[in-house]
Image (cartoon, rainbow, N blue to C red; front, side):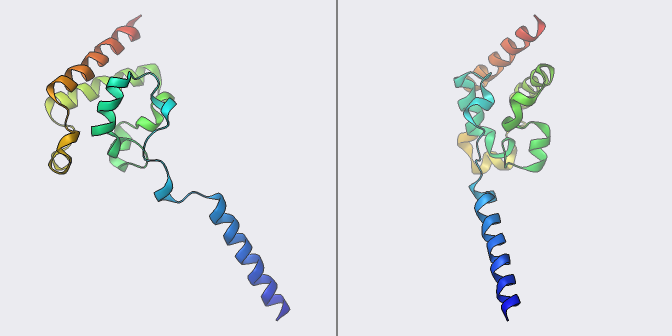
Length: 132
């Protein structure tokens, strides 16, 4: 009996330790940390947050994160950032992003014409700085 009680105590202690040191998936931040997108102007960040972060920031959608992951934006090389920024403007301009299903359930996530201009102007400036 003594051995069984000690084993139970040990296992319970290990489980408690694991639970207190790990962060459950639901509690993880769904938005990148403030400094993650420090190269992105605030007015662009607002647009990205309202229409892109649900899928393209961790924990996000796996497929979407393979294309662009805003949580890891600063880990991308300058060339990769420029390429991703260009793709973002193109996809949103063509109406391919956000996806149709997302637009149906989150119409406020669809950028307005003014927001699209802000987004693509940022991309153009981004491209200019990459050429220098």
